[in-house]
Amino acid sequence: MRDSQSDKLKKKKPDPKKIALFGAAATVLTVINMSTGIEPPSQWVIVLQYAALAGGLVALVVALIMMAMVPK
Image (cartoon, rainbow, N blue to C red; front, side, top):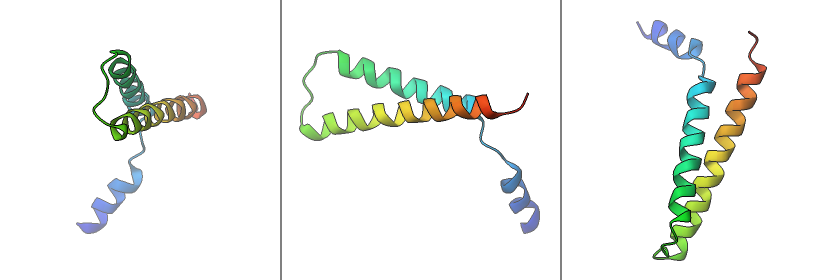
């Protein structure tokens, strides 16, 4: 039984469409949050916002590259 579970994990490939959707959603939500004009309570919140924006953009770009490289 343990072998069949490890085989399933090895065969499971990441879905680039889901990664792109996650990246786009994170980017949009972060941009909306940053554009409201409300001053964040601390410097760390600003750092977290920029980290979320960077992470969302990286996920979006990587997923688009993955979709372009997948043979049809």
